[in-house]
Image 1: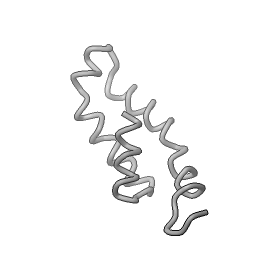
Image 2 (image 1 turned 180 degrees about the vertical axis):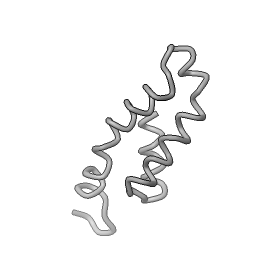
Image 3 (image 1 turned 30 degrees about the horizontal axis):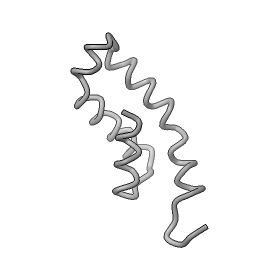
Image 4 (image 1 turned 45 degrees about the vertical axis):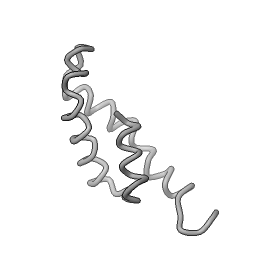
Length: 69
């Protein structure tokens, strides 16, 4: 799920926290079947993906720009 969020960030070049949170919600909603299969609640999934996504902004600041770094 985090990979899908990161792909969205990369393709849209959007890294704001509110936008990332919106993408997390979308990805979790799309993955409800998988969450049921692995016995994970929506809240648990959101907490886990949100925790792991905190590094996305730092990643973008360090590695993503219009000119090579």
